[in-house]
Amino acid sequence: MKFVSCAAALLAVSMTVSGAQAEMLDVEKDELKFGFIKLTDMAPLAVAYEKGYFEDEGLFVTLEPQANWKVLLDRVIDGQLDGAHMLAGQPLAATIGFGTEAHIITPFSMDLNGNGITVSNAVWAEMKKHVPIGADGKPVHPIPASALKPVVEKYKAEGKPFNMGMVFPVSTHNYELRYWLAAGGLKPGYYSSENVTGQIDADVLLSVTPPPQMPATLEAGTIYGYCVGEPWNQQAVFKGIGVPVITDYEIWKNNPEKVFGITAEFAEKYPNTTLAVTKALIRAAQWLDENDNANRPEAVEILARSEYVGADAEVIANSMTGTFEYEKGDKRDVPDFNVFFRHFATYPYYSDAVWYLSQMRRWGQIGEAKPDTWYDEVAQKVYRPDIYLKAAKLLVDEGLVASADFPWDSDGYRAPQSEFIDGVTFNGRTPNAYLELFPIGLKGEERVVGNAVSG
Image 1: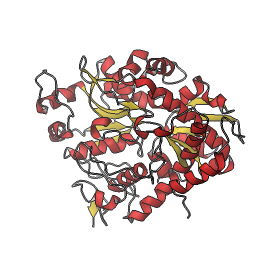
Image 2 (image 1 turned 135 degrees about the vertical axis):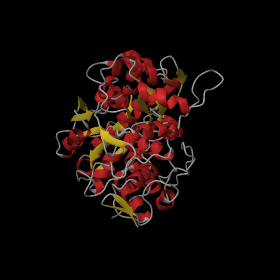
Image 3 (image 1 turned 90 degrees about the horizontal axis):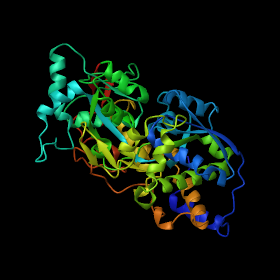
Image 4 (image 1 turned 90 degrees about the vertical axis):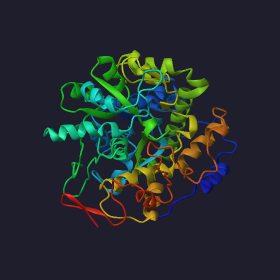
């Protein structure tokens, strides 16, 4: 399998696009249908449509909400959708054959951050006993899962399983919730080829709940908490049924979130169309973040429409405009809760892919040990910065974006990152050494056999 380095790709771009200023690409397919789930981080798609960026590229796009992540992925694979707003883990899992098998790629990362973990009022009342209070009389953040541990132990002693929801087995939310729980000394459970519930040897039982149904499921008492994207954490606050205890920004500062996914076959068959879509999405992301988020109020009004997220504008604005409300009335400034363009948010880093793969391995979705080279090869097969940089170069040549906003010299790997809630440093070049750092989770040659970890 042959992969092209970013530097080589950029050199090729420089040779092919010089003099192409403001020239529309000759797209191979101009009528497209893209899918999304009703979450605020689908914003680049809505903005690219509403601001005319797709049309600027000669594309006539239909945006269609999907019932759940599985349906969305299946419809991209079978061609009913040309592409979609996806969980970052979906293209990776599909390409390695965990769940539905298909070669999906991403030329565009849609955002950073944007998720939270919410618990019921009753659970929060118990957790709060174990959370220090600051001089302002408010809980000190970030709140670790160690504050939840006595609550889980109490439920266990009473013979009640402690259930929490996440949106999909390969979702960021699943991995973030697991990361937070494990950092607080709680076992979130393992997967195996024979048991795909993810609840083997678990202190906390995690199960799938579609994002818009999270608040109602919490209110019904079926789950005691959940990890989800906005606006469904803030919805719990507005309804008075739950308390968001931590954001994913506090679990992993500026973590990659959703991606735009297409089949590898689509990218190969329609290369100019793929570039044109990527160009439009880059412009949309820039619009969302430019001038210190000056456009966010307009973005909130767009997203509040029933054809997009369909939640109250006030609920969406609570996080999209740089604040986040924890307990009712405890609203704090979180300017980077939703990032769409800053910090090279749209660049599809190989190291981001490696982190997701490392978590799949940590929790048994990848059942056997893999060498570091395998992680790199899969990352390069799925994440396509070469396409991204080509689209960016075209936009720079057209004067629509600034050259300084793109990491031209990157080899696809971020510098080691240590701003995690547990202080563990992630180096995408050495995923196996990274896994060795965790007391909870598979590492080395370990695997799940039956209901226990072996090896």
